[in-house]
Amino acid sequence: MKLRMLTLSALLFSVQLALAQRTITGTVTDADTKEALIGANIIISGTATGTITDIDGAYSIEVPEDAASLIFSYTGYAPQELPIVGLTVVDVALSAGSVLEEVVVVGYTTQLKKDITGAVSVVKVEELTNVATPNVISKLQSKVPGLSFTSSGVPGGNDTQISIRGLTSVFGGTGPLWVIDGVQTTNPAGLNPNDIESIQVLKDAASAGIYGTEAARGVIIVTTKQARSGTGGFTLNSLVTYNTIRERFNVLSGQEWLDVRYIAQGKTPVTAGNFVYEPETELPTFLDDNNNLRLSNTDWVDVIMRNSVSTTTDLGYSFANDTWKVYVGAGYASDNGIMEYTNYERGNLRLNASVNLFKNRLTIGENLTVSKFSEVKANATEDALLQNPLIPLYGEDGTWGGTGWRRVAG
Image 1 (tube, rainbow, N blue to C red):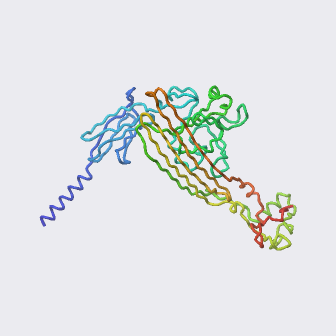
Image 2 (cartoon, rainbow, N blue to C red):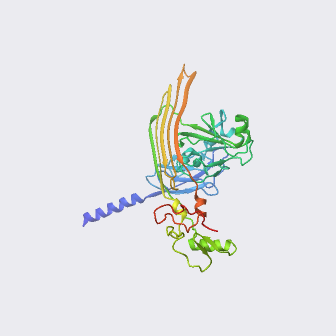
Image 3 (cartoon, helix red, strand yellow):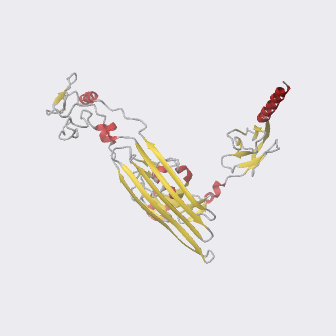
């Protein structure tokens, strides 16, 4: 009995230790102005538990006894992680974040972001990996304010139209000028998104002073990956995506189509195949005299659509020291399209290398890319919506339903 009591006491003591918590209080202020930061985040390191500061910049948080540190963060400020072992009060002064010290590529030079006076947007490249498309244009959608996109949804996304400055330009088009590692182009279809190091979008007319009238529609500057000193190794990324139509179209049946056509024609009889339709007319079994085209309720949108699978695989290798920098990337992407008979396939190989000579007085390098892609694209959705549902997909003899029967309505 005594042994059981000792065991129970030990268990209760261990539970109390596990549940023991302590309170940490303090304030969060601006390191320069000393003003309180309202709504700053305080999170226990390694957990999702946290709190925020009040109107005075003060906070109070319950932490486990074994908690080692707290993470303090606030929009526009550099986060800090501070140890709390043995402490009950932790006051923090956050400094402005490093976003304004970010180096931005502008034309043929670079500038600190805080020194830029023009309309420039910097794309967070890491966010592009969340968009399942092999096309860099499609990946930019919703990532840059002021950019508008138009796409038919063909596999690969190479028909996507992008507009930065609207329809007004010297040449009357809307597509921006792309500058990839200093080389100008209007079609980045062969660019592998996995090779991209940074993207800057120059949106105002000042970019024409650098690149001429081609830049009147805006400029997208892309810098591809380079090896960094002291780093090296392989990277492998692979993504498989299942694609489907989010919402199916609700199309008319054969009977509904005839009724709508009758009303649209001013309530005059509708000629369809070998019969003339009026309300309450008994529909025939076949549309032709050869009894080959059976009267149907064909959903032509459903006929041309399908679910698809797309894949992207990228392999990279980088090596760098004080003399050499080498980056090699290989990628493969495929998409069999959600519309029948469409597909997209692309292969890429990139080599970015440089060597420093004469104690860094001379640098020789090259950026080489080889790309091959093929695609079969179509946009027959509108045609499918307008097609006559009375026509069957196949005739009784196995041939296509529309063969030899052109007049679908009078």
